[in-house]
Length: 353
Image 1 (cartoon, one colour):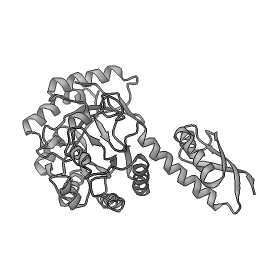
Image 2: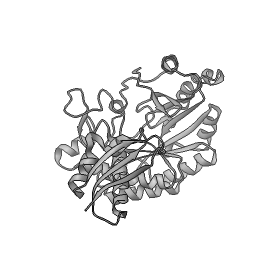
Image 3: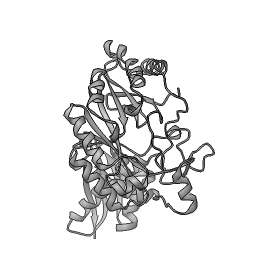
Image 4: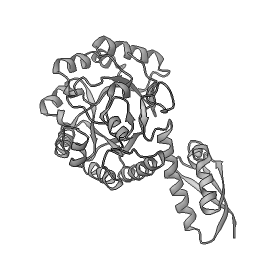
């Protein structure tokens, strides 16, 4: 097994176990799960046990919520015996209260009542569906092998059986316009997921999409385009209190800048801090909105924010401050103030024309 860096979400610890391709009978044009996950061999119950032990030894605090996550996108399409083998390996840790629950990702067309009853028995709490798009033409174009109807049916069943529902979508798929991606977000909101992940499309080595890219039949989004598109989608979800738990693929030894010799990324909007860029862009819009409310030509401002948000105000490599200067001829500075709540800011106008 390749051990990944522990992902900490507030006081929650996620133990990631990657199960690439096992149950996936389709081969989407953009996908190479072995590259994306870093896993090249099939996972066994022993691997699950070893991975859990490894992470538990490295957790600093004892009183945290610990969840084992089976990633890979097709868990419930695996042979039933294999599913139960992997899930069974987690049960002793749940019984000993070292692990609290299990989450998994799977295909929308690999969910039914029998599967959900079985998952309940094994303490699965969260099921994430790899939706990618709600446009049936785009789903067929990318050879997903399922329809939006499958997504709606699976989402309804998952919520009926009282699992936490998660959705995963992609921006910049072949033939998918900004309008299409926005519509996917709006469609998913109607299905009431508790959380979503948003991934910009990258061209990965060994995929059909790489062949299309090399022929000139597919042009990926630039980083800037992907950030702008993702930004608007994040806003839609946040307006409906749906948690966006990830934007952009996790960096690995192979998912890295295409200039790196070890990288499997051929082209596309890769950035090691893509999620941060999106978050900063949302903050920039909020700052500009406040500036436009001021009934005067603003020349210089000071923006106060919680220390946890000060980087969002400044932007990656001071991009937000530079953009304010270039676009509005406005000199802005940032100041930490932990009396201000996270996610909020205060603007002090220092000079007007």
